[in-house]
Length: 150
Figure 1 (cartoon, helix red, strand yellow):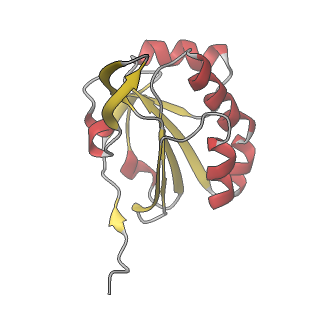
Figure 2: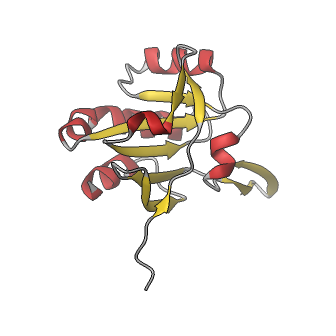
């Protein structure tokens, strides 16, 4: 009988201020981990703003929201400041967490095939176990859907 939850891959990445943040730092809390393609693009901005709008609700439910992209810490700092994002943004230029979570995939846009980050979200419990994986999520309803799962 397979009822055992899979451990979420741990990682250590830099936040918008250049500080190192590890997933394991959040043991004891639920984590909503979301991966997005790029700062300041229309879909990614709407997605981040939706997570920001529900931030108090996530906190009430005992969850931390963490956004990850391959953008630099400096880019994240500007993005967070411009849109008053109250949650953690992590920079993954080496694709460490991006690949560990399987979100670095082949994408097709306008007939062109390239590798990139597939917009995805993961729900991690207080023990660091992966509770849910959601790939190819929509930027406009991702935050609300993740909040409803808590």
